[in-house]
Image 1 (cartoon, rainbow, N blue to C red):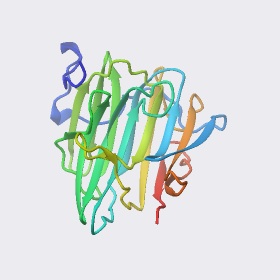
Image 2: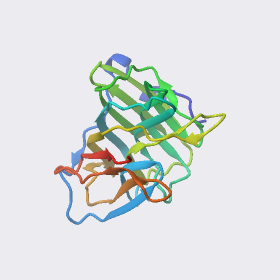
Image 3: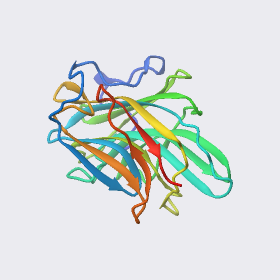
Image 4: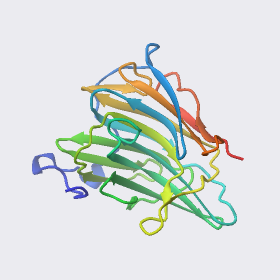
Length: 259
């Protein structure tokens, strides 16, 4: 059953809170991007960032970012979600999604920030984590597939707090890995709708890596296809767009464009 919050077995017990840190385990690694990597470009109405698309299952994903300073509109609602995940990009594994990240929700000029995870299709909306999140906080998150379970961890490097959860996601295939800035769905469960994207300047990801068949690689690794996602309105207005990958292939910035 999804959402148990328990480790897969007694022999694979979750670490104590004092020892908990986000990040994938150390493996052999590809140090940088590949000039032979296949690269694609796509547009969505709610996501901006990068996707790694493979023919075999990823076993771990990680990423870092700094919680941005948003300009909340004086009236009305707006929102911004920043997350990493598996299975979410349109393709063969679209029926499931395992994700963890942070949100800033604006209401009449006031911002509320929080950490969360979500397992689709089991969860209908974000499940909040008990971590304090503030503007400027340095965040690192990871999702590891262990046995038949997912270990999702988010750590606030600024405060030293971390929280993790064990979850099940039956039917997941982990053929895509995502690092995303999103205009999230809000108002659930009673009135679900895509939020207006809050002005955020730029969000920078770093240490964006995954493990495939026991070897770690950055987004730019040649063993998988890289997909760059622009966030556009239905009329084609660009609202957010990721820049090029950093030299190490494991970092990029998403810039807010909507005026």
